[in-house]
Image (cartoon, rainbow, N blue to C red; front, side):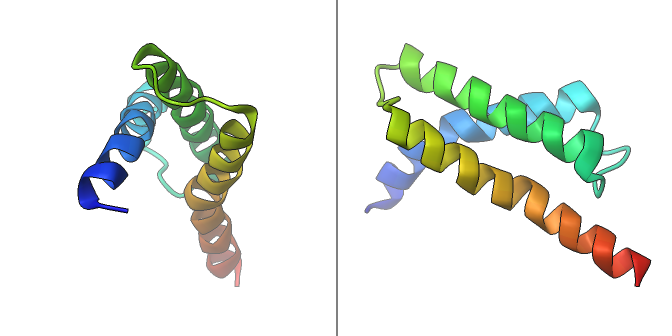
Length: 88
């Protein structure tokens, strides 16, 4: 995959992440899984898929599932680890 291909796939999700970050004001509690991580994740998936659909990119069910799981791990996983480390 080329850098252009990666950028073409990533931009709708990055835009959705930005929307979620602004909506929840993620800079206030960036390490919280709930609500910050969940809101950013939902906005990432929903906005990303809507933008992909609007630009005639693929939104096959399998892609939605893989994108949802992988973005959940990326956007909430590190927050969960940070919460566990912070308690220890």
